[in-house]
Length: 99
Image (cartoon, rainbow, N blue to C red; front, side, top):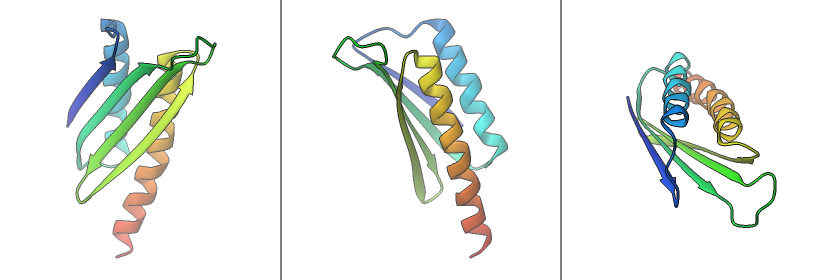
């Protein structure tokens, strides 16, 4: 499984990248035929507290799943995206099983 991390208009720290890699690896527990995980991180312009946006796209065979969250930290945003994707992967797997 390939994990692509894109930080828009800033450099993501090694620590943040390692965190994302670890979280993305856990997705394989829910569905093992994941082709690619694309994560884009950006700071939303108005300087408010919750301005860290994470968008995660998971490419699976014949489909793609997507989650987008905005929180105080990138870790929190990524965490919530991964939780949402876990649920989506379980549903996707069920759907395949019922065909």
